[in-house]
Image (tube, rainbow, N blue to C red; front, side, top):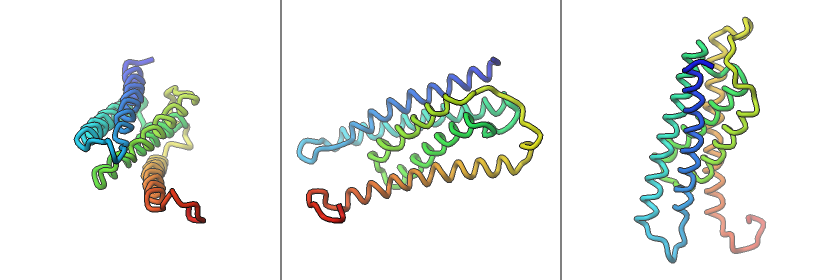
Length: 177
């Protein structure tokens, strides 16, 4: 295993651990209206988003070092695609967080991203040259745009689901609930 390959592997595991810790801080932002203190929630949310950005940067280091080590954009096998999907999910969360400041969204987005990264580990992570049929610029354009759009749409789905849960009165048993 080359040095860049080991750096990329360490960066991916670091991102995974940082996402786990950030999830705990986002969990601390869940509030009880009677006892919660706003300043502690804001502090936990700020620490959570800061850790999420640091984890995203670590995952970006993984992506770039793997790209340099492999000589091609790392989206050509399932391991690389699934880790890139987890990265795009976190990117979508970061973008939406800065628009709407929804800390609760991090409590759903980061565990899903961690599950996706963990799921990637079942696939072989070996770097291999591209087969001739995949040596096209369209591969990179297609796979990266699909992965980024899937990540952002997954976050949008979770945000819509949270909105529905909040807007419908959960105390009444009706057809809506």
